[in-house]
Length: 133
Image 1 (cartoon, rainbow, N blue to C red):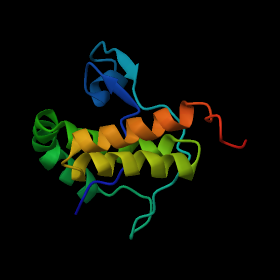
Image 2: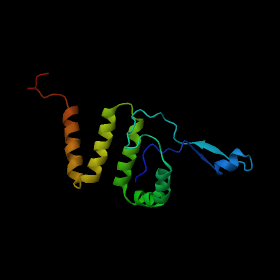
Image 3: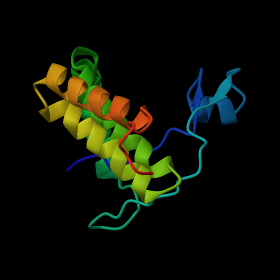
Image 4: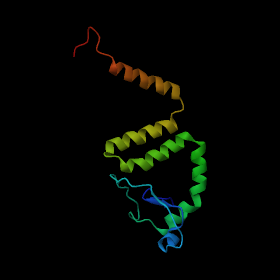
């Protein structure tokens, strides 16, 4: 069981929703996740979020936050997976996921940065005197 990325928190409140609805407690509401989804994730049992999904999220929430606070690469990867559903094109989503995977699985960051910087510099430099345009 894993929590699907279809679980969202569209609004957070300073009081529980039941009390706020009954006006027993004065509450402030803050919109949180309001962007439209452009890429839909498919799940084995459909797009519906089940009670088991919510329970799994509740059980693992604090541990996941602890792991994310200790590992920047993991945080980047999970942010990329979460955010791709809001990107306007599948190609941008793929680039985002690819970058996150490189961050996770490329231990030689200095060599990777050098290679990317070198390629960008070569692309930005005008052609030499013998180059044909």
